[in-house]
Every structure is written in C-alpha cells, then in structure tokens.
Amino acid sequence: MRALMILLMAVVTTTPLPAAGVSREGERPRPPRPVHTYSIVARDAATGELGVAVQSHWFQVGTIVPWAEAGVGAVATQSFVEPKYGPRGLQLMRGGVPAPRALEKLVAADEGRDVRQVAMIDAEGRVAAWTGERCIAAAGHIEGDGFSVQANLMANDRVWPAMAEAFRASEGQPLAERLLAALQAAEAAGGDVRGRQSAALIVVRAETTGEPWRDRLVDLRVDDSPRPLEELARLLRLHRAYESMNAGDDALASGDAARALDLYAAAAARAPEIVEIPFWQAVTLADTGRLEEALPIFRKVFAAEPRWREILGRLPAAGLLAAGKVEAIRKAIP
Image (cartoon, rainbow, N blue to C red):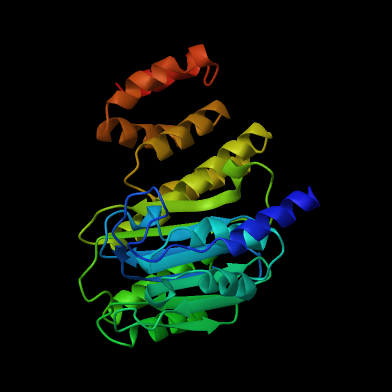
C-alpha cells in the first residue's frame, strides 16, 4: 500500500496541469472557465472540522470550486479555474503532504499558474494560498491562523480583508456559520464586481468515519439565485432544524422520549414554516401519553395542511402510533 501511495504521489506531482485553454494530445482544446469569485477554507480549532465556502457570479459554483475530505483537508480553486487542484490537492494531503507543500507542487506543475487562484488547508490547520499575477483585479488573499480567504474580480480590495475580519470575529460559533459570515462580509464590502449568482458551503468531520455519507456534516449549494447568500443562509437554518429533528429521532430510538421532544421543539422553532416538523413532534407526544399537549399542535398542522390528517391514519399500520390514539385525535379535532 505504501509503495502504491508513493507511486500515486509521483504521478500527481510530475504530471503538469494544463494551462487555460490548453488540452493534452488527442483532446479538443477547452476554453477556460472564468469562475471569478470569493471563497474561504478553514479549520475549526475546537472540533477539528474542515470547511470551504464560496460565492460567485457563475452558474453552479459549488460543482467546481469547493473540495473537502474528512480528516484530510479542504481546497478552493478559482479564477480561470483548474478543477484538478481539488482532487489532486486532497490526494497529496491524504498522503501526508502538508497543504503548503501540496500547493507548491501543483502550482509549479501548472503552466496556467498566472491566472489561477487556489487555497488549501490540511487536517492540522496548515494553510497556503496562491494568487496568480494575471488574476483580474481586484484580487488577493490573506492566510490566517487556521483559514485562508481569497478573491478575484472584486469591486474593491477591501473584500478579502473583510472576510478575514468576519471569520476571526465569529470565533465560538459553529464552523458553517463562521464560513457564511465571511461570505456575507465579502458581499457587504462590495463583493464580485459582476454581481452574484451561486454559492456553496461544505463542512466535513475532523476524522473520517469510513462511511463517506456520514463524513459531510454540511453540504449546501445554491446553483442559481439573484440572492444566493440569503438562500444559503436559509438552507443552513433548515439544515440545523432537520439536524435537530434527526437527533430527536435518534433519542427516541434509544428510549429517551423527553430529550426527543426537546429536540423536536428546537427544530420546530428553527423552521416554523415546515409543517412536518411539528407533526412528528405531536405524534411523539401522543405516543408517550401526552395527548393533551399534542392536540393543539395537531390542530395547527391540520389547519395549515389538511393532508397530514390522512397521513396520521396511515401510522398504525407502520407501527408508529396505536390505532386507538389516532381515533382519539380524530375525535378531538373534527
């Protein structure tokens, strides 16, 4: 395995990245993708979580700029973007190469380095950033303690310093919220001179679980919107609500109904517009002998969306609520 890893690293570091608009022999030339944008890569010192967030006036920026892997690192690759910096950077860091050295190797091998902007952070919090001299102004980056912010084609040169300040000032909050705060600060300082279109935010665990679907703690994208950061903030709020809902399900499965109800209530408070959340909160109350507390919640749910009355009737067959309790609810709420 070690020999294979060394071989893979050798291939990565000796194979040049093609310049913008340049293709390998036998391939059609491809035009450069001008994903001019602002982004942040960071590590949470308290939890070890790693994250990357980005906003751009470019469709589906989340498919090309942000890369992250639990226990390995995070990468943002932008400007006249070369996506290979993402997987190749993660491959090097996975093999034990520190982020600064990984970026140095990839930049050195890239004939189009002058138009690239890339930032990397590894699992130890070591950061590195590169802004090519031909990136469109205003362009620059700041490497901080456990983070890097970078931007190009900005309205002014205050954008990335504002991001750095916002990230530092939000210490103590969850990493996803801190990344979002940095993006919001960029927009408030002027943002992309072209405007705005899409955004993305990824947070991964400090260490891999061996199950990739559990390693991504937050994975949100806004592919096209006139106000992508507002939409990203809304999605993060919903993510936290459903995160609480899922934790409530886990608590209920382990027999802790009291904690489950607390978590369901917290979820409902975070996302009052989602009718399904209080529905399951009320089901849990009814199932644990607290029908009188459940009835006002059921009334509000049925008034908002009558379909949940029908769904209630399907629960006994699934073993989720006794038929007698369903009948009692229906009688109490004609």
